[in-house]
Every structure is written in C-alpha cells, then in structure tokens.
Length: 238
Image (cartoon, rainbow, N blue to C red):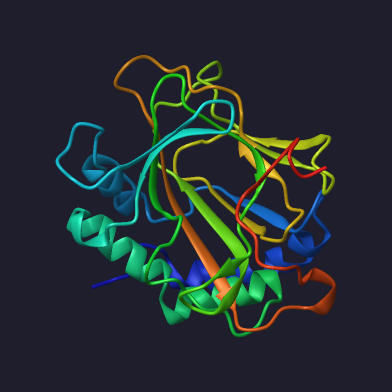
C-alpha cells in the first residue's frame, strides 16, 4: 500500500527546504502546502473523529492557556488515520525530517505522548507556549514538531492561526493560517514559543483539526539542553 505522502516529492523537497529551515525566523521552521497526497488528505478529513464520536478524547479546559480536544489513543482511530500516523513515523519519513532539519538519528514516538489528533471547537484556543522537552518513556529529547491541518473549510475570520513568537516569548514573528493539507515543521526547544491564542470562531460543526507528531533524539546539543520541564506558557516563563 502506498504512503500517504509522495516519497519522490519528499526527497526533493527535503534537500530544497533545508537551507531555509535552518535560517528561518524566529527559529528553524518550514511550511509546506499540499503536504499529503490529495486523495489521502481528503480521506483523513472525511474519517477524522468528531467531538461526539465514541472514542477516548482528552478534553483540555484551562481557559487562557489551553482549551481543546485531543487523543493519542491510536487503537480508537479510524484505520486511514492510524495508517497515516504510521507512515509519518516510518523510516523514509524520518529521513526526510533529518534532511530538512539537519538533526540526525531522529526517533518517532509510538506512544504519541501529547500528540496524535487535535480538535478545536468554537472558543477553543492554545496559549503561546514552549513544549515539554523530555519524553520520560523514551528517555529522549524532543526535537521537532510536525502539524498537519485537515480543516478544508477554513476562512479568514475563523481564527486558529498558528503563531510563532520570538525566543523570549514576548513578540509574535510569524502567523501561519491552518489551511487544508498544510504542514508546519519546527524545532522544539525550551524557547520555541508558539500557539494559536486567536479563538476558533468557525460556525458550529466546522472544527480546527490537525495531526500532531513529535520527534526525538537520545542526545541534543549542549547549548539547547535544559532540565526536564513540562509546557512553559508565555507570561509564566519570563
């Protein structure tokens, strides 16, 4: 069965994107349009679980910090979604990530800690934050975040834009609209602040949907190493 991505395209895209990824402001990142094969993206959207579906949703309700739904319960995912996540944790995909990022010996997270699938309803949001930096189960450092958006009906005014802030967590540098089949890859450090504080404001039944996957290494550069910590929210870190 073919991958949900075009492997030949990814190989070319990896080498072409690496210089811009390394030089990106405010920290290494890249934004990719039409990331998955079109038919795969459509199928994932059609099969993406809804809030009322019978599955294990985690519901986050810390207003001003994080209000959303998510699930890392792979066993409950529809088969196309489960297969897509396996593809995005596969060896060929890891090699693409290594080429883009320059980070060697990447590891996937089969446990999907903090990741998997995310869904925002009207009023949901995610405050500006830097992510947890250590996976206790893998005994590994978190190095990359990959977000793939699966909301085909997004329009300006719906909110939910991803914001990338400077490394002090005090200034927004870039805004990325969650366009359908757009992917965002960025470095994960203790100072890579990001979030979507702009409330999701789409009509009822239109959700902000994404796949969120994180990648790790056993070691990391000394200048990036910090004691293990959880999520650091803007305003609580500086």
